[in-house]
Image (cartoon, rainbow, N blue to C red; front, side):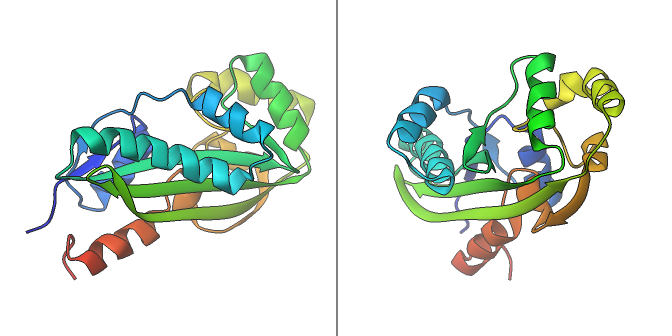
Length: 199
C-alpha cells in the first residue's frame, strides 16, 4: 500500500508539477526562517548546494515530525551567480538590479528535494541547471520587470522560465523541471522504485 504524500511547500508550480504527474498529496507549509539559516550557513562558507539541501531537509523534517506515517517532500532552490547567492527580490528595483547583475553571464540554479519519513531523511537530490542570460537592452529589462513583477517576486533571480522570463536567456543546460524548482524525474524514479508509484 503506497504511503500518503505530503508536500512541505506552498509553491504553486511544485504542486502543479506533482499533480500533472498524477500524484495525490496534501500540502502542509513548513514554517522555517529560511533567511536566518541561509545567512548562518553563508557565514560558515557553506556551498550553494549544501544550503539548498539543508533548507529542503529542514522543511521536510519539520513537517514529517507532525505527519510521521507519510512521506514528506521538502524543496528549496538557490541561485549561484559566480559564488554569490541571489534570493527572491523584495522590490521591483531589487529585481532589476539582480537581472542587471546576471545579464550576459552564466549562473547556476540548484533545486533540492528531500523526502523524510518519521522525521528522518530517507532520500535527497540536488539538481543543477546552467543558465546563460543574453545581453538584453535596458528598455526591455524595465518593461519586463514592470509587466511581470507580481509573478517574478516569488522567484529566485526574478524570472520564471515558464513565462516571459524565457526571453532573457540564450542557453539553458539541464533539466527543465529543475529550473521550475523540483527535480521531478529523480523524485518520480525514487517513488516508483519504492513501490509508491505504479511501475
